[in-house]
Image (cartoon, rainbow over all chains, first blue to last red; front, top):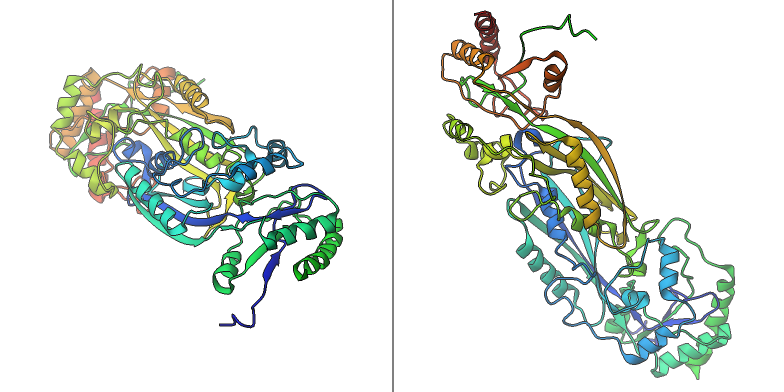
Length: 290
Length: 290
């Protein structure tokens, strides 16, 4: 409706990451995301496991068995067709990412405190996060969760799933494939309801386009260091709308450090990046005006 | 300590079930039970799935994969050695149970509202409940369980398990086998803590012993109907202590109907069974005194 008033050459957003302190980091890609929720129901009420145990299916067991079919043991998503549209990593991307001034694997281990790295074989941590789609169980619940023991067979159990999407995956198609997979793998003795959430699309732009080169020059100028070209796993849905509605590309010039704890307790941002951001704003206007 | 004061010929308990209205029902066996709790931990804090998804193991996914190894798809417990000590059903038991004045399969479907029967192949519902051991997941929890979507990779996930035991299974041995199974099947990328609960033993007595026959006669007298010989899946741990400490057997002469909803909302008990219970108390004293 306000397309004409919003006419512009490019959008500039800094809601992405900086790979290391002082390293200017243009992101040329974002993940998409889509969501669904599963409810598995067995008996019409919670049952005494001594009185009924063994004769009816346990919805928590059934849900666990169902969720276990989502991945193989190497971390690859086992939904048929899930990877069909996924663009393979370009050679130049792989090379650029391997030259980043950080050890991505080490970074992930330190930031997460996970006991070890785990993910799809054939990729390092940054490749997994930036370029490979995921199926994550964000929440699960059912039965008795309090202290001690309650010998109950719960009436139902639920799980919340999101899928991180990469180019060229379509959210609606992934939801359809996921629903088919879940229906085909539902264990006997229970029923299932699936509620689908909405989808936010992925984004990919060319860092070597005229605009992309302007962004790289501006970042170099503001931080006086070579740029590190990255993509991100997170999602900024409006970027796709800028492209679809306004017909413009978005330059993602991130200022958040890897330990910024986005959306977590102790979220933080270094003061020096406020200064850097001011320099960057001046520089990008100069470069776009050239 | 008070063994002498408590010296007696037998104990009589009515905390078991009556298979159908008006059908006197001596139970000659009870299940045992034992419990454990699993906590699976991945990252040290909840993570943003867009920033870290794909590079670390998801504890909920790992827990689901682990729990899915507990049973095969036919409902049989897949823990190595789990059935080693289980006594096979005797021919007379199978026969007695198939002559019961109720259709056990139909009863279970009606009482539970489950979409279909489900359990170990080769057994009907009553055999599964009374004579076959189970592994039930009584509760599961992890991550975001509220409304809508939260794209989090949870730091940890937990599940509560109980095992229903039948003669001659030992609770401590089953817990040991279960722990071994869980450790061997833990997916990569996470750690696990197991907390074991305590064990209540099973009970089995001979319904054709002198005492057992007295109980049957008393029940016949009180209800003026042929008895239905059953076992139960539930547990009454003190019965094993009566045997172990006092050296006496317990006569289980139940008065609760199948729809009594034991330990559930709308628990109920028919008035006519109060009258029956009074008649039964008189009759059992007469029969034991013969």
